[in-house]
Length: 267
Image (spheres, rainbow, N blue to C red):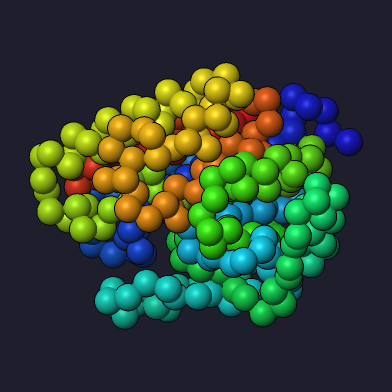
């Protein structure tokens, strides 16, 4: 068994806009570099990765069971070559079974999907962070009701995986209002920074304060301006739950198209 100090951290990473790293789309260079450096920050090579992205919602937590997951190109209107990307990482039925076991022990239902592949919230950032595609990956869905408290509970139930050399990764965006993202409006730019400051202060607070504030995230400054629908924020709640008593720290920050974006690490 791995000692507590050496267990894997929990990561929340922005996954960018569509296949932004694989086309001529300026502004994503700092996030590109951050993702490429992630593996070097880990205490060791993980035995497996459990990931939740902002692109899979189900009625109950669901794990992927496929041994050779295909890719789901769930972005639209991008150059043809971005639909030819490959990421042949294996799945792990054994890890998926362990996830299911832990959730059920915590009184949470868990389903399995034997066919689903990886959506772009997984394979796009992982192409940069884990380019060899040789670490088994299992994806876990989020609650379609977008319940922040439930995602915190799901994360807490899975914290033990970190001591089993499993890396837990959540991918989404700390700002996700597509209508405002492209319009260069100074007012919404400022509001994104207000929300980002609140979020960073919350993540870096004592875990009890952190979790309480995250469960009430809609009270934050400009919360609904930054997230008209919160599916890209909810993976962060899952990550905070899996952090347990570990404090969070911001590991990435940038302004992209005027909007503040951040990434975090726990442990």
